[in-house]
Image 1: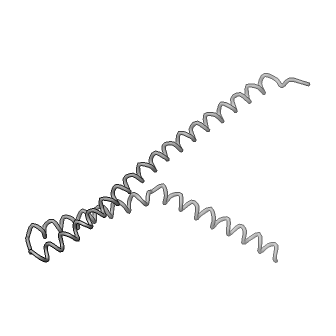
Image 2 (image 1 turned 180 degrees about the horizontal axis):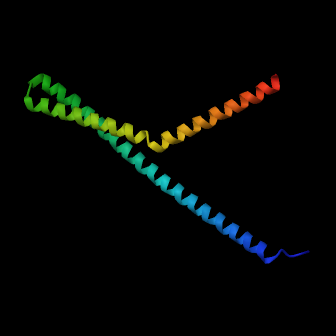
Image 3 (image 1 turned 120 degrees about the vertical axis):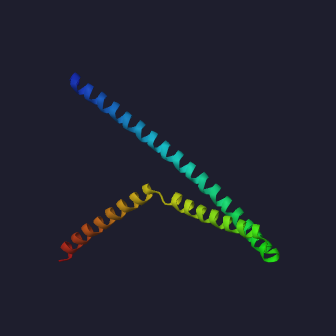
Amino acid sequence: MTRPANGSNSQNSNSQDATEVNIEQALTEMERSLHDLKMRYAQVHSDQLQQRELQARLSQAKQEYRATKLRSLKTEIDQLQQRLLELEVALESKLISSTWVRELFWQIVRFVSLGVVLGWVLRSCAG
């Protein structure tokens, strides 16, 4: 058996080192993405819980206002409705992130392009 030259060994070593670095970077990125996703999920869950509580309080305040017509209840109702609107906007913005939209765009481009290529191939086979 012949031994490879030293240059070949150093290239294999460099290639392995680069691969390990790439894997470590990918794992770090995945961990960061998972952490971000967990944080977003916790915030969405918290906002949804707060939204349900505010809706219940709003319903209760409306019933009390109908019975008493107190000005303070009307103010509270307006504040609750404003806070619910803010929560709704926050939930929508957290559920639809720019990364998700970007990924969706490229998925659409990829599959539409693939469909066009497959169509050309099928047309050339059929015709």
